[in-house]
Length: 291
Image (cartoon, rainbow, N blue to C red; front, side, top):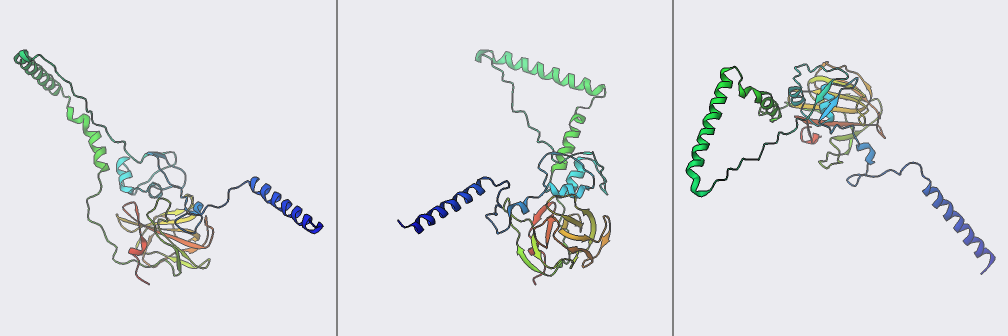
């Protein structure tokens, strides 16, 4: 083997060893791509709430908490006896999900010899009469047994889905002109809205008439976020803004400028746009007009 070949092999092994050492000492993990798209999985990690109870933090509204827990704000309000306009305060404890009440399946079994069936029947009748008499006495002294279940029934009633007809929006419009680079997905790590790219600073407009129920940056993964209530059924959200130009409780019309496009809490300049129907994410493209 020539001297040149020996030197070439030595250099190769030195480079290989350096590369291997560098990989083994990496302090941060390499970006992991979502198998459902080309975006980085970390961008999909929203600040969601999965617990049944929650302590309110500064800057939050009931709408932002309902948004993070994928719940209808009306259900949370009913469970916690909060009336419109749904004012909450830091440190307040909210029940988001009422635990299901398990029905008792235990039953008392009476065993008696076959030849004593008549005696057993007589004893059962006497016990039934005693129970009825005891119940009647309790009622006479003002104890209404049915009231014990009133609280439980009211909670169960709050868990029932709304039976009202859907309040449709007469017309939606695109919040901004641009290219859709990420589409809606129902998968667990899927995008719960659409991502539209554009230039930093261009105007973002309200997709429909409504009221601003959240404007801030308290929700990790959304950056500077605006949530607009259009009616009792529909909400829309506008994330990663550069500047927010509206305030909470402000009434706005369809097409009003609400913010400017940016990249707050995102890897690129874009608008993340969502529509929710009774607290659940829906595909915005089914509502927005065809371009």
